[in-house]
Length: 167
Image (cartoon, rainbow, N blue to C red; front, side, top):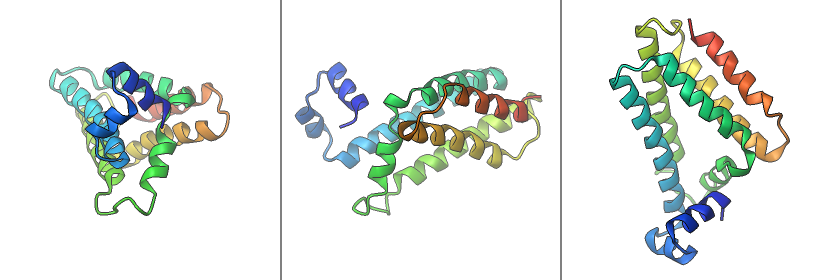
């Protein structure tokens, strides 16, 4: 079991058995993790947009977190999630990673369009910028588990995306 899940069990006072009494399967555990991460960020974006916070400020805050997460190869769930959801025994009809991807795309496009409408962002292809963000983030998270990646890489990548996006 992944170290992050283990630490969450410790913090929550659950044993491994307690975790499996709460969740019926490993699939349900991974589904809960993916959904929690997805909705947490979506709620954060929506709330800040509703408050009228600068799109650049929202982007900067998210990218600071992403840079930290991208540099932290020890706590990445990317490979575990990839391995689990590419397992042929996992139902393709559920397709939780595709659902998560589409949800992330919607959330990011709302932020990008918000920034464009406010005149803070260039009039960019929002699909392409979303793909740059998500594939840079997930790619570094996954590769950092396999090979040593300089801690400078995430910052360079995110700065380049900002240079394309921010006026």
